[in-house]
Length: 619
Image (cartoon, rainbow, N blue to C red):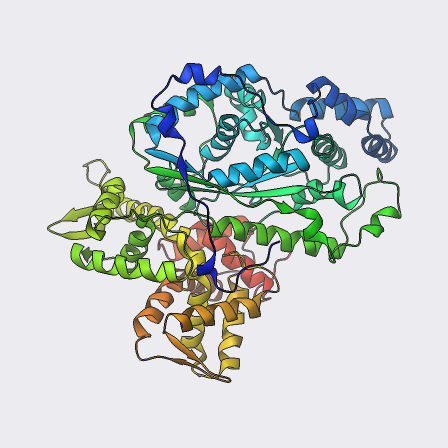
């Protein structure tokens, strides 16, 4: 189910349809008020919110935990049960169709202003329509923008699919009016971390599992846990994944369908906000007033958006031969059990592979190629050279299996011109020369520090688009750097370097655990097919025409290698024995202010801890 073709270029993908085309021709109010008759799981009628709450509070699992907490804390069971009820009231959604209709009307207006098109793969929708009738469904969208969960609910309403219940952070609950509107549209609110709160975890997990077991509605959550500020996939979290799989493990459900969804933006609404956050500017708190101030984005052009619903993944097929469900028969189902080591490894492996599917189905626009080249040429490029190299890079990306949305029957120069116009805030074009620059800053004198910061914002904004295509080049790039570093043509030496780099960057990129040999073979195959390498029995040799491709691939990873070097230099030269984790990021930034994002610094530190190059001690 989650295996990958050895030859990614052969993968067939669905066609798209622009769902805004119809919306531009008809009444938004009539559309929002239309008859909505979703297909339900085995024809069940969803129970009322009050009934759902009663089922959760009276469940054997929650009652067992209430007794445990009462025994440990000394509080009466009635007192603990009341606390559980309050937790559930704070958490639970209160979906109302009238509120959903209001959002559909409002979002129809907003999406038509923001996007030129919103393209969806209808075959994916048809697969989902079939899946929701057969087994409980869990929707797993990628997460690059606040738009993601709004668009998901909007599309499910549009195609007469059951509206999802969505795991949302507590931050949204503090938004006056909007927080309650989201709750009435299917959002349920959870803390960012539970710590050791046994009761909170029990209420949360039983709430989700009850909705799943009853076929109440599709559950929707983000495997990455939070929005990716860098626009590359984050290391997945497995807590919620374990919760939705557990009813299958315990034999309460025959199967659960996991549906990875890839959401791609030609231009991300939060691009400059993300860059500032990565440079240490505090994230603005979610608030209704902040949302109202942000309405100026409605006057901007954000190009097109693509939503790709992947093939449903059967948990039953996924777990076959990997999970011994008999272990769950040793105790009554309602008694809480921590996942075994084998189960934890299975969950981790499944999470990585699901995120990899999300990556592979991401639609890439021409700008990601242009951004990649402009970042490698900080002094800019002549438009003719940029056009020529973008066309070369397009063919390389397609040969490596990229899902590239390149306009048919349009000259390359015209495609590039349109992309540059859409992203004009990040660059300047003068006398046929294209360069990244601050073009929307106020025309006032700035200090050198402010100028460096503004430049860094542009670079990191541009890097977020380059990051979208990294998964396409990653494995060949690791091989290219390994060949450069190994100083040998012996296959074993190159593989050892490849494996070291892969291990070092395992927090930075989505690299499935245990797939080192498969990734190495894939990289060899792709570069050999492109005529870059000759792979012999014991040697790997660069072909006469392979130099430019290998040089490009090495430069793809160069910013990450340089960033990790900066972190290592700081730890070797400047650090003292009493450096706290909280002080680490600002200290590195002041040590060497390059366009070094906080995300990269955290990943570098995690890699050094994992490789035992540094150690963390409690103080």
